[in-house]
Image (cartoon, rainbow, N blue to C red; front, side, top):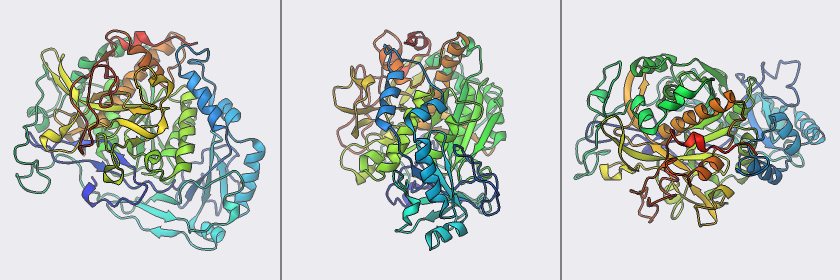
Length: 605
């Protein structure tokens, strides 16, 4: 795992993986996973090396990842404002179009670039000896070539930063000036760097897992006087394996969390397999770890269908805690799911969403993303990229897919000292995703909820808390009008367990570990939502799409959410944010009560 104190952060830096790790029975060692800096959209390819292939990708296609290919992205002309308006209608209860979802192709033809515009961009780019493939959304396209082809097109080589064992991605950078043909009228380059996974140097990343508890006064140790960290007091507590984190009460089992939040009834009522896509941005996982987790916690792990994204022609060999936690949490909630994984590079967010909704098997019911960082819209680091990705997220919602994104682990100051006051995580701040925050959960007999407060581990000597606050740039979406008096988008939307101890269990390298963060609450909430959607499908009804309209409307009904009224997520003394009755900037609407919330899903318009 990457040590955040050693991580360089050239702007814009955003890929904090929203997960932390427990360090021992009393003290929690800082374990934020900071991913590689998002500085470009990354390398990809088609089914063969473009220097030897005899045919270009089809006009609208997602090229299969291939080695030796570097990919940058171009925006395309699109009706983004109209797309956002129509997507909002499809997600608003009471609207005549609520839960009426077009196909991806229909939505792309209505709001994306026209055939003539695509032809013009294609002709211009290919005149440079590069390949161009329009994404099925028609909102952007991929420009592809080998490093040699890029040098021929640019008249100069791409700058290259070699991969290392701890960061096994080659980084390519465009020169300051590029030929006009690379950005024809109506098209704009989205970021100027790209990454390509180098499997030959992978395998020696900083280790994850439980670290020894540092002695007081040593670097990384909790300050003297820090409160002792709570342990698991819920019963019954059963597992089919033995490990120190279980014996010491450092984790909750998935069964305990499912019982506390009412998910068991969803599993009983689900009569068809939900389709869940997890996005992996450079993490990696090991199938044997998923199998062992299932054996330990009493579920049969579903098979995982993996898609390689741009710049990752071969599966990432390293097994990271982040992706392992996502897959194991989803599997524990929905073991009968069709589970998909899109594996891209640390900067491959646009590519990952594109491949998720453009899957040949059809769009998923839900997408879960546990990555994020300092919001682009907060520091205006890459407005063109943000605009296109927001449009892709809007199209994701419009086509009936529910997206869940971790709100972050840095409380109300995701951007740290680089931004004065509060700051949020991107893409959680997008109005077309459900941002999931974090809580500290205490269980009792029967694994019932004894108490639940906002996750903030600073009292235990750890700078970790659930993301939340007001956006500086994103206007308030319609679904928050009744609960948010401000004019800006507020985060989070909902919350769930995220504390480090007792935290989430994850098997990595055959070892059971304790982790925390919104990387646990997010896939849990996504998978529970997917179970509701599968029941809707069995009843002949459409999927939920963006869940926020449903959630905010349901919050006015009794018992649909466990209201979190205590605690705060202020790690930097900025005065925000405190939990209170009803919606707040520390816990959102609270924690979904899955025994009551499904019945509150409004019918289609």
